Length: 466
Ligand code: ADP
Image 1 (spheres, helix red, strand yellow):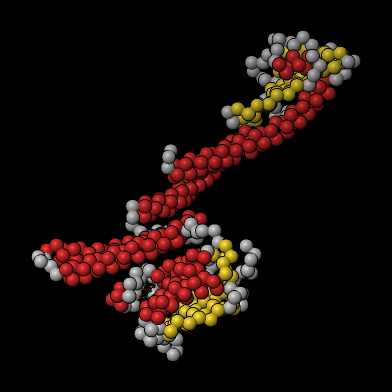
Image 2 (cartoon, rainbow, N blue to C red):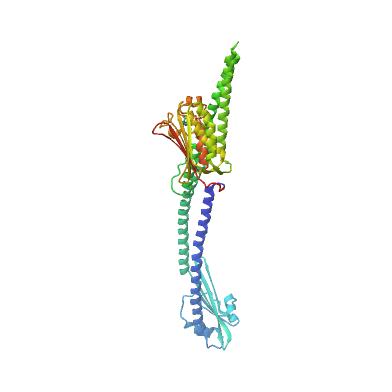
């Protein structure tokens, strides 16, 4: 009873049974009632005719009753009795075995002798049995009773036929409906169990499994929704796996270098102190790299978790100036000309740290991927309600084929160069995640005159409103 198919099946059976029961009883009851009424009218009319023929007699006896009854036409009744006021039969239409001379106490006769018209009809064994009686009066005195009985098999047969037809029809309808409902519930439960199997498969980790439920009904729609949910799940799962494997690879590289350097120091006898110093300094650099990667990973995990710091209205210009001051030292070292132009009406809804991170990462990249003597220009402006930050350099630019992928985690155009420059491959992912979380966009392009340009757009807000 736990299966949906059994529940559907049982409810169909119950509904069909109720409908068929109604079909088999209601029309029969109505027809029976109609026949009863018509019988009452005709039988009472026959009795009235007989009572009328006896009217005028001051008392009844076998002779005058027989005389009066002789003129009454034969009406197809099965039996007619006429009694006197004490219930003694004076006339019996039955030719043999008549009850003349006997006392009779049929309910209808007793009723008639009490002064009432009586009628009773029953349908049994394919026949209508109707009984009717009326009192015979003389000067308001009951002098006897007339009783008529009719046994009708003709109408009984009609009703029996109707009953049989209804029964056959019901059985036919029942069989067809049952077969159809069986097929229907089977089809339905088949779809549901298909969906259930798919859900279980995916739960066990088979993310490539899809349901193939045909049709346009709700279950088919459920199947399609499930498939698109699984698509997303698979994409997220693939990205997660790639991220985990890339991250562990990235962490493994500096760890392996540290291991190698320490082994060299330990295994080389009488090692030159200058070389030891160089190796230890390399170990320090690798450790620093590990720290940078872990910090970036933590930053991304925080962004992924969706828990954001409450945004405030941030004036971007002071943050930009602070980053520029910081970066000018690095730029100076590389003989790179770092300049910026900025307007002072640039306020966005974010946090100061986020803005700092975005400007820092983009400027750092521009300096990192420019050659000595290059130029980096940062511009901050307000354009059609948006705050636009662009960072341009005149370095090598980014190959067109790599452009769509550079915001992916750990994606680098030139791995060796990035590593050498101290990159983690996560800087641009952090930028795009940070910006998008605040409703902004970021894009990368190559400049016609050479070099790359990164453009960030934040939705602008009016300063000091929050
Ligand atoms: P990384 O730590 O390697 O710099 P990012 O996510 O910041 O990682 O950048 C991803 C890749 O995009 C870099 O490895 C580099 O190949 C490319 N890239 C980023 N900025 C620039 C730029 N200004 N000029 C040329 N290539 C760039």
